[in-house]
Image (cartoon, rainbow, N blue to C red; front, top):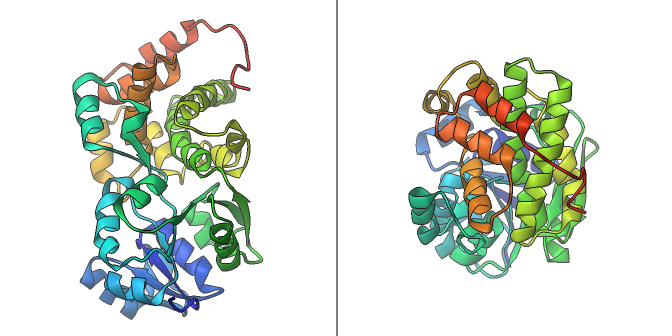
Amino acid sequence: MSDKTSVGVVGSGSFGTAVANLLAENSHVFLYSRRADNVVSMANARMSSGQQLHPNITPTDDIGLIAKECYVIFPIVSSDGFKEVIRTMAPFLRPDHILIHGTKGLALKKKGLEKLKEKSRISNRNVLTMSQLIRRESVVVRVGSMAGPNLAREIAQEMPAATVIASRFDEVIHEGHRLLTSPRFQVYGSYDIIGVELAGVLKNILAIGSGIVSGLNLGENARALLITKGWAEIIKLSEVLGADVKSFLGLAGIGDIIATCSSPSSRNFSVGFRLAKGEKIKAIQTSMEEVAEGINTIRIANGLANFHGIHCPIIKTLYQGIFEDLNVQTGIEYLMRSRRSMDVEFL
């Protein structure tokens, strides 16, 4: 078994770096970047993604070294590159490793991707959370997810925050708590890993919608309407994927919504704001340094709703606005005409 005094973080983006600095308060940390020049820069300047690196952090581009030296590894990369990273790690991973990912995205099986492109429809059987992807692509059994109101900028500024470590295994939750807890960072546990992952992923849809509301100056009543009714749509979709509704009422659900649906520092909020100001989605994506996971998530959520016959007017309208150039004002008028009966239908 590997030495438990070192922890690995795979991914040196803003959130990966923030998590590495948190972990470094309790342990020695290997911070992985696949680019050798970036590793040299981090080692020399002691900076990563605009953040000062803790003295206990060692930058590296050797994934085998991390697997050898670290019992617990935190993969924190965008969902579009997650499968490639896990496949790169897989030859070095053992069943005794613990992987706790911090990626709020979804992956598609090849067949599902084809169907989504052809018909804008996809079955839940073709959608994978990141924990399911880890299990599918490696021998690792003990997998966890880190989710919650964890804006990287605020964590980097050492502001108080908290997270949820979700796993079916007690030892994963215990290790997450042991490694991350500090006077400025609280850690809670959950056994509903699918629910926690989906809450963290799907709330990005609402963050984009909230950014649109701000960009159009529609007011807080409109934002509350969007978030509340959009949240109900997300919960209905998540139940199809096997989630427990209770997970949406905690930090990974309501907590994360409060943080990302009102913060200009949220990448997904920023996408919505810029869409409302007339920018095109391709131009927005090209200009962003890091991935806004909500864009692809809207596409997948709309496909799931279409396949399973779930009425999701907010998700559908956001999908049409991003991928089919639906006029924003037309979309708002459609939503305001959308008939609904009961208020709370998902409990």
